[in-house]
Length: 194
Ligand code: GRF
Image 1 (cartoon, rainbow, N blue to C red):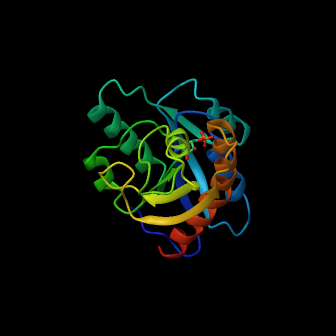
Image 2 (image 1 turned 90 degrees about the horizontal axis):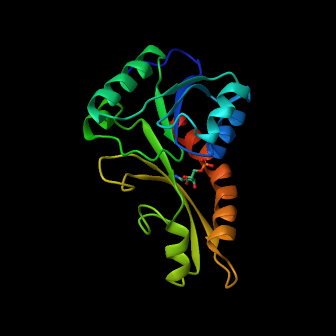
Image 3 (image 1 turned 120 degrees about the vertical axis):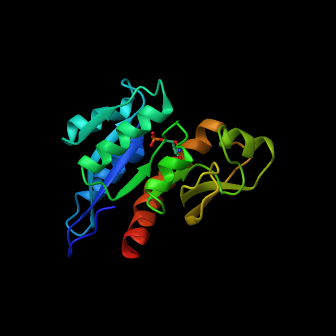
């Protein structure tokens, strides 16, 4: 890992597969003078990921990897990260699971945002499962990535109340709004401890 020099901004790569609203939100935060980070690269496993439009809009280097072979693809991604002097990775709706070996290369330097109050509701369909189980609250979590899915150390969490008339759609919208507040805060917390 490259050492951070003086008060230079930390280079962050964001990994996406879909809409990219968290990606866009992180870019906007990075542009603040005192943000402490710079989005230097976006990586997607899908060439048609909607969020890639923000790469063009904000002139961020973009790379798409097709993932036909995990080992080869991850090697290429690691090369790309090295080439761009990336210090930290933010997963934001990235639908591929990173291997143990990949994670080892960026140990303690990979963050993920998950739409539930971990350790509850790891994996997919979190909102529907929380509603079906009559939970009073759901929310979102930013955590470090370790080799076990959605199980790394929690950095920050935000609770969101579930109302009787909430649907998967309304709940996901409410939680996404909180995600946009939580991810930059969590990133700031991690940066201050580097
Ligand atoms: C978010 O709900 C995030 O928690 C989950 O995937 C979704 C990504 O949304 N991991 P977006 O692509 O950032 O809009």
